[in-house]
Length: 393
Image 1 (cartoon, helix red, strand yellow):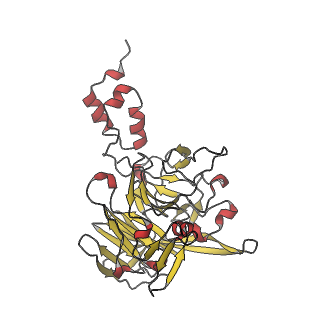
Image 2: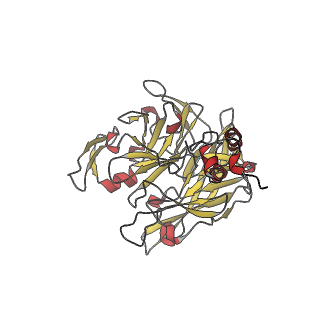
């Protein structure tokens, strides 16, 4: 007589499902039958950090009137999957990915957090709530925003410019769904400022003493770390009534085109990205390509120490909040690699070549492996690919 697997005790099913480390396996477990699904939580919170998805540019449907589809590339199975995103819109720009949540902007003033896995959405203070935005009027078409720079000069911006060029990246301290008050820090293109808000705030506030530390920001050990173009670090404590900033000055200065901060194990590391440029007369524009990455670890002096080998670690950088994972935790993955995307597409015309500046960089031999998901169908300046760590909570 065949066993009836649907009759397994619910406490046993709950115990087994709680030991599954990969979200995809958990979803398949719940899909076996209604009894298994009802015995397990819809939004579990036991998962360790997951191998990220590469969220691809939004794809415009051929039939007018249909909604857009989101797509993501899975490193685990090497396939492109459809993802139904509530916020799917050709006018949407993604300017951050942190703890499984996307930061999205459109041509309205709203700044929203969206979890593509659950469909949950939260609002951050809008664009006109930044300190350097002194006016906003929807009726003033083409110059809806009034901005003030550091020299108190005024200028206007339209809706599209604010969506595409005002905010560089937003980083979160924690998942908004996990309880406790999270903090968001925004890197602004305009004025090279850092701004922050707490959960429930109505306005953004500047971290005045960290101006110009706008290459990248990460959150670690209760503090935000920001880096400038020379590799100097501002440590920002925004837990009190007003932000406090201290500095880590290192004797080594860098001349990289782009810099990223990332926590690898217990170490704070700096990844520098060097670009080659090629002028295309027919475009009257310059196309950029990544030439080499260098990795440095913050030593005790303090000073940046060159790292030649990441061991079992993989680093993921781009417009996401940078992070590192152990390759041995994920079948088929290889360590000592940097997975990178084109996070400067607003100034790069590589989309014209139908191949964005993204791939897998092998630190050992400085070679680059293309991500197999690259396709001309997904070429887009407004929504470049972005790493997203699936997080059901």
